[in-house]
Length: 378
Image 1 (cartoon, helix red, strand yellow):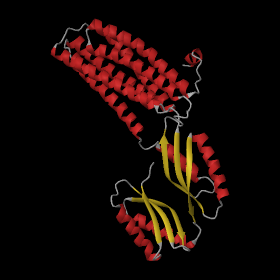
Image 2 (cartoon, one colour; image 1 turned 90 degrees about the vertical axis):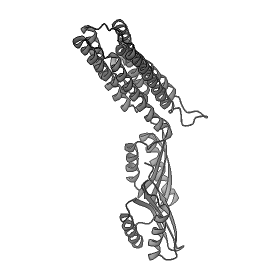
Image 3 (tube, one colour; image 1 turned 90 degrees about the horizontal axis):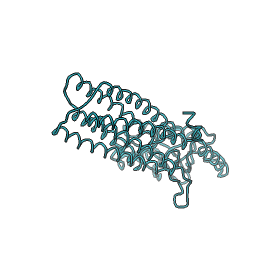
């Protein structure tokens, strides 16, 4: 691959160039395999081999789409699209999924037709060797492409690699079909063609499901969220962090918000210095544009410490309540602020709120309780 990088003047440390070169490698290999299989399959009158060849040709097209999508996604933000064009990569994956599904449905039609109108096959051991070699090549290519896709966080590249690796399994089915015909003189080509079609459809469905989920907005990458929480909570001057929200605008393109607890005695200027430095570090290290909300808390006061123990006991007694934060007690105004985190299965939020207020009023009768009941976003 290093020779190819130098030949095409690509940078092996550039995400865009790595995706381009990986896709280019797939295009070249799949074109050779597609031509060989279509010719062999036509001469042997094997729908399974021909379908493999056409599937390889489709893989070449999906690799081309991956390159085009990556190039477009790398365009700089504009006034119309201030968060950039990263979502184009998801659209590319969507098109790839549709092409895979269309290929699968087409093979189903052909296989069913061949079941009712069988034809003689002309297979030999050398055909078997060509398919076996193809299977080994596709295993290597698929594994390599998926590896590069994960390294570069490219859904389109992972989709191409997954389909490529599935092709190797399809090739093993073809080998099985050929062996049965050569040594048992029984043709199950149409039936294995049907199995191949179903495998292709399943691969297309998986790519489609994953892509649509990301476009609709699933939970963000947990590893990224955990890393952000650790970085924020370890920052001097920040007591705790909660309510992290991340919005994805393509690979390595996130905007987010999080609420942080700070000592209520700190000045606005002190808080600004802490958050400004943290914001820049997160932007350059994690590629996340972060906005901060602030909770003022008083952890040192004995009265607040006793209240925290009481709230912890309240949470432990309830299965669907997971944690709390943003506790702030204002005795001068008889006010109490607190946020409680619950899981998605809790239905009676109003009942929980009333129980919490009753618990607080046992110690602080007549206080105004500002309680927020919410779920975690990551």
